[in-house]
Image 1 (cartoon, rainbow, N blue to C red):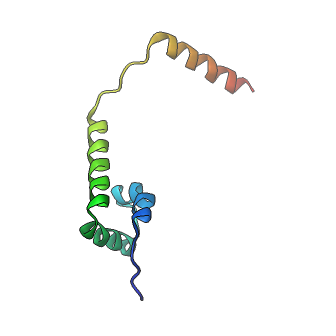
Image 2: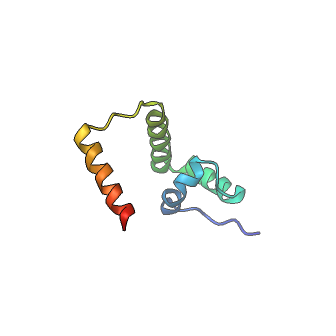
Amino acid sequence: MKCRTVKCREVIRELSEYLDGELDAMLAEELMRHLENCEDCGIVVDTTRKTIEMYCKMEPAPLPADVKQRLQRALEQKLKR
């Protein structure tokens, strides 16, 4: 099977699946090979990974009461339709 070259756009397009470990093995290997040679994509992947890790460790911010009430009303109206 012929090996193809992954381009930067494909890294961005497949980033979520790559970080979640959901890419097919061959594409993941090609993407890793690209990351070894492309500093810009490596920075994007590393920054995205760190952002996700930080976000997952954060406590959710409480919704202000007025926002919560508006959201509740909007959901009730949507469900009535």
